[in-house]
Image 1 (cartoon, rainbow, N blue to C red):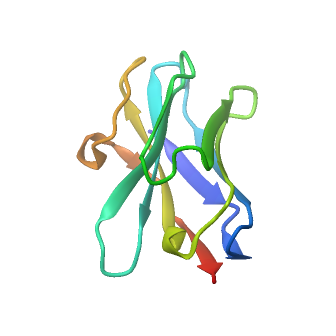
Image 2: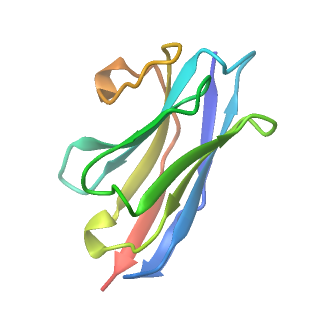
Length: 125
């Protein structure tokens, strides 16, 4: 069983930065792929970024490429999402997710098995 707890959300002005954290608990994370998704009011939950725990390979949605950075800290079992140059359209609830897929990039939310409770990010114009 994997438990995920997000933190770091909040209110920020356009152009500002936030760093989200996802603290994960499991016996070992080397075989997991970790993703960040977001869901705005009235919209579907969309892929944002993903990282493979084993190799650190990353992939981003076009809408955040060059502004967001996903990373992981093995010693802390934590995945981060550094968000820079934030825009009002980045406003959403952000979710951390995990799937048991050794070394594979997964962007389809339907394939993820474990989800955190979400953290609200609001960007004001």
